[in-house]
Image (cartoon, rainbow, N blue to C red; front, top):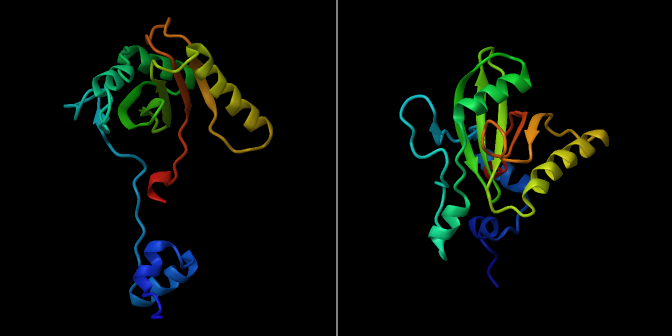
Amino acid sequence: MRPLSFSVCARVGLLSSAFISRRLASNKPLSRSFTIGRRIMTVEGKPKGDLFSYSLGRFLYNEQMRLQERYVEFDVAALKDVVSTHTGRGNVVDFVKLSEGGFNRVFLLTLEDGFKTVVKIPYNFLVPKKYATASEVATLAFLRQKGIPVPDVYGWSSTPDNAVGAEYIVMEFVADMGLDTK
């Protein structure tokens, strides 16, 4: 039986990451770069899409229904005011849509002094609605109490009956490499 080549072993996961790193390093040095988030759309300037609609993928089944479930309209100016109030660090100068997941739309807001914060706005299909956001905030508080490093929550609302018009969580921005790049 013929031994498997390096590339075949690497593709099927038969080699440890340490071996692969040494093997690649022997050929040429690797440069490692990453981005904190993809600049999908911004409020200032011309947006690359809609802040309220799901824009990162397609659905194979019931696409219109799935897109409607993920449509969340909110008052951008009110959200900026809420972030300024909860952080106490001045006005928002940059508003970027970082990503969209299965349950939330995530925005990165930068304030006047350069401080960055994250706002998560959940989609409308989470059930029971008011408990999903409250549960996430409570879970973060519990984990922090147990000594696990999690982002601080500056403010939140588990009901859309507020100035923003949507549920939200304003939380600490943690600069790191995203899971999608590891």
